[in-house]
Length: 279
Image 1 (cartoon, rainbow, N blue to C red):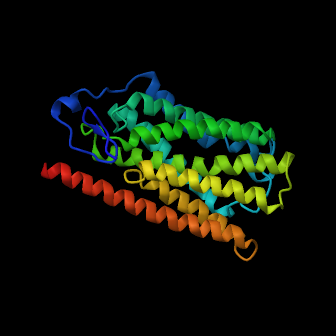
Image 2: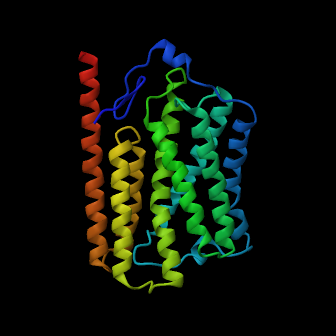
Image 3: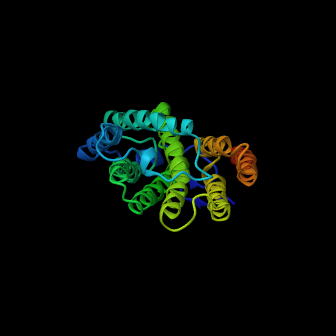
């Protein structure tokens, strides 16, 4: 369903008027440099456990039947790089490429700080704090996704709009997968058998349903969101292949559902845009 609010419309991006573009606020000053500082902080934070101070993320996390393969975590390199580039671009251009730059920037800053804090509490092996930190990160990143999926700031450079949407899509999706994994790891470490399939399958299905729901809302614009979830579920499939048939089935089913959902919402968005153009 299409919903109008000024020139904003969920699911369709009409070209805004000059007056609408002029009304978009700029961001500058300390808040933009804080984003750069926190983007650097989340990159530097992993040095602490890998220098021998505390446990590494691998050591502090309970191995589960639904844990993604190690190669999937390389996506953090992309997140770190995009975070730095976008933060510096915001300082340079005074925009996030969205119609609500200040709120989106604050969301990203909380996520950057959360990523650094997560590494530190993980090194300290505070079992229940890590999923709480990730829950906060997921909440603000989903808010950022909501903003980034809305009509863009067309006064900003096209490359900045694209970079912001890619960063938000990738980061929000990875946080979505990670928050369910972290809660499962905490449960497996303290409350349940980490080799028991039933409860882990429930967590995995909840993660899949949540990711599909978000994809239905923002996936037509933030294509990086469903693509990153596919990446995460491919990692889960890799771990479970030949070991746990049920997990393999859920992973494959989720990947197929993500592809179909993304295709459907993209087609709906395109048709909505065509209707507006002909009106």
